[in-house]
Image (cartoon, rainbow, N blue to C red; front, side, top):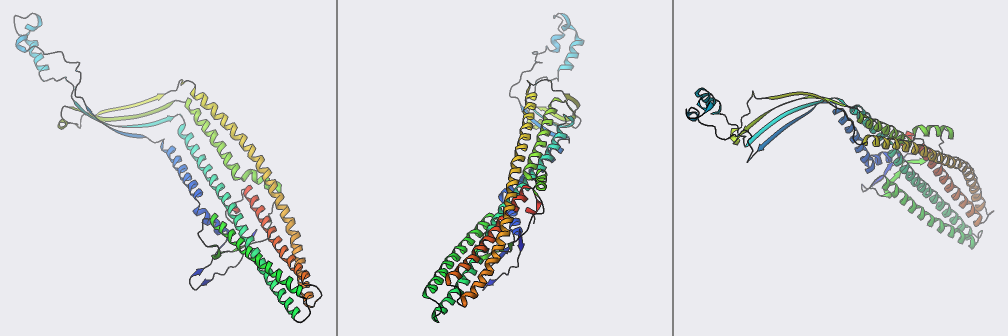
Length: 465
């Protein structure tokens, strides 16, 4: 697909430096600086935190509560009005128990210092620990869902890297084509300059014609114009590549350290199709999403299970009329230990409807997987057609290129001895130029088809050469 080539970096007078990068270096730079990659990496961190959150649901929950109460006015249910004094109760003129002196003394002792009126202020604090014993199976189901979600985000991360690698590879190949075309046009200008020089010399010694000189001059001007177009195309292609990988460099100071080469995939369509069904990133994400939906359905099914819990509460309370009268005694603790179970009985059929929605979503994802498999099979078939056609074109163009170069060499010698005209020499040079351009285009189409197949089959070499 591509091959390495040695690049020499020149530093001119300490002002201009030329940077050369390979395709893999461009990919790595893009992976580090892509906003989309950074966003999905943050999603991966969130998924890891979600998994740890579900693990934490199995630990005890401890809460500390503090409450202050102020009552400017309160009803007292124990206010029976003023009690009769001891002397009144001992009055012999009164009837009944009021004459009982012993009873009067007892009541006086009991109620003389007893204040049943509610206090205006109260301060209460308590600490509560609750431990889930059986949380409807939601903790185990939640942990499994979090793990599947993390795996799905990881697959989406690989999918994004694959898409970005494909985009960068295409831009890099286009830049290589533009660079090879620029080299071809420079060679064409050199040949045209040499042909024009020979044409002028032949005309000066009387062996050529003015028409040959004019034709060679026209051909030279045409090739110079084509060279300028090639320089512009190379600059634009490199600029597009630098923009794709978020590189702020001048196209004229950037070199490509790789080059296009004739490499072939060691696989057939049937082999690639089998690998695609197992390793394609889009299919892997959908299948992981199908498992995730099945786990979520199971999580909804746990709504029918009971919840078992246990815990303890400890706290203190102080009732007072003034803030300075707060008294939380060390021996005045209120301690409670509890255990319980909550059994869901009926909630209007909400659980049943949620289960129906979950089953429908499972069927929907299964249908999407089948649809994507069919579309990917068509895409792989088209990619292999392009790949085979590129191989055939490359083989034909390679032979044409060899023939055109040999014919051009023969024509050059024939023109020097006057056996052919300037137009015939120009035609041979033009054939060489066209076959070189066609050869570069065939290499590009071959490399492009290979990258497409690698992406469809989930080949990790597309991300890491």
